[in-house]
Image (cartoon, rainbow, N blue to C red; front, side, top):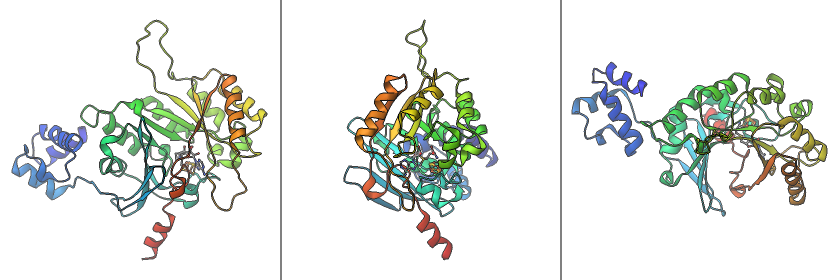
Length: 345
Ligand SMILES: C[S@@+](CC[C@H](N)C(=O)[O-])C[C@H]1O[C@@H](n2cnc3c(N)ncnc32)[C@H](O)[C@@H]1O
Ligand code: SF4
């Protein structure tokens, strides 16, 4: 809102036009200044001469047999990113991207293989929602597409501010989840400045083993991540005021790999690591990617692992894999080919 007001003042317009702009953009889903009928002709002309709304419809869509839709968007700078719409009977979740590729190079992720090309602006993050054909059906947003949110936190926070502010989409932050490997500066800043839910990609409870899967462990280890998390309140109900609002939710994500992190000892190490933290665990099936010895486990093993954790104080659920047939499931998003083609031109 402050930025919108600054923009209109710089154009010689009254500050209240900034508020009107927010109403049109976030409330009415307009795609041109001409549609802002309560703005003066001068205001509309000056805005159109200097700015654009920034909405870009998806350039392609792929439809999974399970109802998942993968959209391809082009950013303002011409890069490509993917966004996944995941409907279930009781909710409609959008998995958004925050970068073109990713710098973190996790051994199991196609986006990591792509390498990093660019970070998205707040407008490009918001456009994935703004220009989504199913926008009105959305109930949840997860930052689990391409990229590492804490490596582009300025823009992720600008986008979540617009999503949650009264002058913006006015969504509850409890409907938005940011997923991260856990980078030092980003983690603290996110916890201090945002009320959105947090999901930490754990994948191995033992630092030296996690490092083999996730190079980010080197810079800021999982023990340090958990130590920072212990200093904040998550989902604790107020013992006196039972109707007090719930805090944001903390969860951990864990791909269960055959012979790598799926033993009883690993489950025990998780219980030890997370002891006393108010959190839950999301177990994820590994979505196969080429050229890796990593393998997923069968359902029986997955259930055994889940039950061990839940019975020992870490409530765990198994996340269903969606959109695998169109390469839309967790970790499969890549626009590498498109980026390469673009660079060859
Ligand atoms: C693609 S990441 C994006 C968010 C953030 N960069 C992170 O790592 O948390 C979202 C989730 O997908 C998981 N993931 C990555 N590759 C996967 C794969 N091949 N199979 C299953 N899950 C995967 C990640 O570990 C993470 O929990
Ligand atoms: S799992 Fe997340 S952090 Fe790791 S490479 Fe993929 S997108 Fe990046």
